[in-house]
Length: 336
Image (cartoon, rainbow, N blue to C red; front, side, top):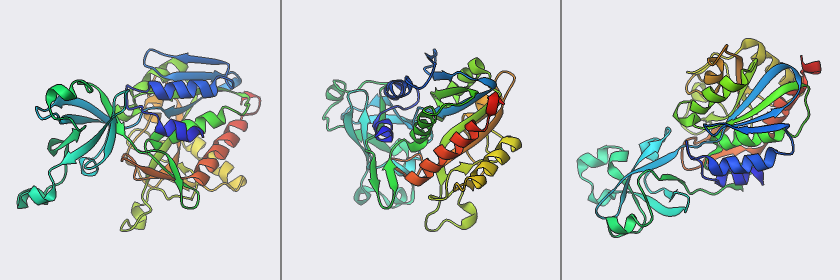
C-alpha cells in the first residue's frame, strides 16, 4: 500500500531521500516532467493551458538530531521540528540510515525527588539508550549529526482508521500522488517539498521556480475530537471530511478559492469541514509570499495526536480529500 510505504520511510527535515525515491517511482508514469532542485524538492509538471496551479505536499517529518554522546554511551539529542518534550520519554526511535534502535530514557519516578516529580519531561533530562556501555562503543554505530525518527509502523484499526508516524505530511503526499493519476486541462505542477517542519524552506525555493497563479497546500492537520477538549477547541474532527482552512499564522486564504472548494463539496455531497483554528502554518505561506505571490488555499486531512510518535486518521477522510481536489482541478475547462 502506498501510504504504508510513505509513512514507514524515514524522512525528517533535510533527510528526505528515502521518501523522495518512493514518490519519484510512483509518479513517473503520470507526469510529463520531473525535476529535483538543489534543495531536494520534487517539481513534477503535468502540462496544460491557462492558470498555473501548484499543488504542494511536504515530504519531511518531525524527528531528532544527535548532538552529543555521553561517557556512559547514552546519547543527547535535539528536535527537528516541533516535538513537545512531554511526549518523548519511553519512545522507541531508529537512528540514521542503518536504523539503529534506541529507547528515549528518563530517570524513573522512583528515583526522582519531590521537586522533579512536579516538573515535565524535557530534552534536558532525556537521553537515547542504544544498549551501549561506553562512549567508544556508541561511536561505532552513531555519529553526531545523525537523525532519528520514531519507529512506529503503519497499521489499520477500528472502523476505517489508520495509525502511523509522519501522517503530517505523508498523507498529503499520498493524496497528491493519487491526484496525478487523473488528466486535467489546467497547467498543473505537483510539488513535493522539503524542510516544511523547520520553516517552509523548500516551498520558498520551489514556488520561486514555478511562479504559480494558484497554490494549494495538502496537509495533515491538528485534530482534537477527544475527551476533555471542549467543542470550540476542536479545530477538526475525524470522519467529517477534509478540512478547508480560513486563516493560520502563515496565511489568510483566498476567499474565492475557499468558497469554490466548499461549493464543489456541497454539489457532490462530499463530507467536508472548516478548520476552526488559526494556529500553525504550512507551505501556503511561502507560496503566497514568493515572487509575485499567488492565491492560496489549504485542504487538510485531520490527524489526531499530530507531531507525536503516532497519529490517527480516517481512510474515508483521505478518500474525500482526493475526490474534492480532483473535482476542483477538473473544473478548469479549457485551462480556465
